[in-house]
Amino acid sequence: MRNAKQAAARRARPPATSAAGAAAGARVAAATGAAVNRAAAALSALTAKRSLDLALGTALLLLTVPALAVATLALALHPRRTGVLRRETRIGLGGHPFELRSLCTRLLRLDLLSRLPHVVTGELSLVGPAPLTPEETARLGPGEARRRHALRPGLTGLTQVRARSGMPWDEPALLDAHYAEHHGTGLDLAILAQSVRIPVRAALRRPHRRGKAHLSDTDHRLPGYSAAE
Picture 1 (cartoon, one colour):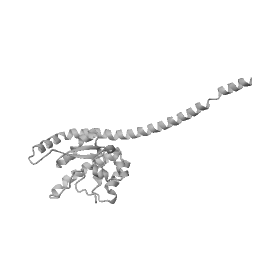
Picture 2 (cartoon, helix red, strand yellow):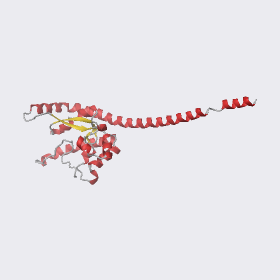
Picture 3 (cartoon, helix red, strand yellow):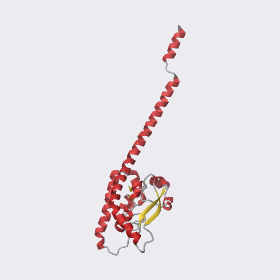
Picture 4 (tube, one colour):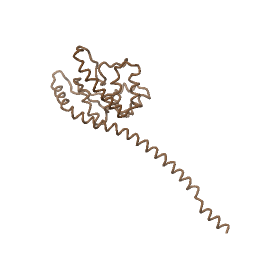
């Protein structure tokens, strides 16, 4: 009788290994769920930015194709031009190098607009840090390099629209760090609006400033930009 009761008690108790396995499974499931949630949040943010790049970048490219075609033809037929496109190696998302192609002209900012195919293909974003050369990237600190490699470089960015303010907190490194921490669709749209407003205002005021020299636009910063400001 006693043996029968002990056997029944053993059958009623769940095996220790089963309980431990269930606990381990619950921990794995919880960790997996947290990882999935983090990945989903990151994918959602990435998708929103990439969707804006694809939609707006494609629309802008279609609108500017006629002007880009005329400029390309004019450069090709110009007797003093040795090339139509400027080709430069820049560092993109994840620290991967790519060839940045731009029209060799500053007329109507067509050099910037000619980079729109890079936005559609994903090498550039509409808004982001300036695309750096390998030499410039090699001089970055570990933290700044990590922030830059986590984002696609852009046609324009916070640094480009604020570089002429002269404020001490508007140094390029600080602006890039701020953008890396706070970038989002709202900030991107605000930067795009500012990027359009600045050259339009400059074009309207240009007749009163004839003869003023302009800096090179190799890194697509605004005219008058200086790292020492």
